[in-house]
Image (cartoon, rainbow, N blue to C red):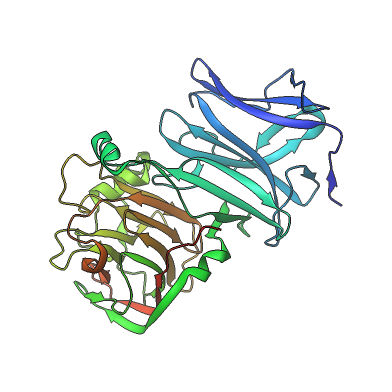
Length: 385
């Protein structure tokens, strides 16, 4: 049975000692006077300064969120830190020993720069909260600009909050699942659907009837066989997924992939931001790479245009992969395999803007891909109450 700590308030602070990242816990009975716990709640050598720590419970089963104070046998805890050295957010899953004010990550949860991330793209300084009215844990993150300071001054603002996401524990117990809050659906407008669309090698199929510069797209891809998956180069095992994506971009033909969506594309394809999958085979298993590649997103110079990427821990028994992308002019937020891997990109097209933007489904692999279903909606502008 879950129980709550009601007598003592707790607050967490992140810092570093030399190259060791540390999270300290402070306690208060009146929320006025705070006392630091004798020992850190957790620390990890070699990770550098910890910013914006977040610590909360998740239920081991079901989709309900939990209040921050909930403990119990059916609960895991999440410790998230924003690493100043990398500008990415990492998290571990583990056990909280409340009596000792001590957190211990699971042995399946890497506690270093190779660890799990909320988002493998432009996503930082996030904070979660519990919504008691809907029993949800909601995450809200920030994305800075990838253009220049001069551009910030010209437009008069810089940095945005991304779409809030719900957080639940993956049934495998080893990672979190993130998904845009349900309220976003109220902004959906005109709708189009593609079904059973075959994509042979080199095919590019346009999605028309919506506003591609401001859209919500959900798609399920399927394939007949894994036989044509490319070998995973052993040298890549030491690399981050982002580095692998930079070597195997959407324009590099493969066996099983790359396939996905070309977002914010100009008609002549001088500009586009592809969000795609590649499937490799490696030592008796398959490796799924998800990329959001901004290298060809704009003709404008002096931009930061990375090829963000993350690996997707997904069962390919049914030979299907799903993708959802939220497109909003200079932002592409993507959720692979039901929110197992998330990537947010900031992009600044010069030609693929407003009604001149296009959206395509594509395949640049030898194995034919079927778009089982693709649902796309024009998105309305939100109204602020």
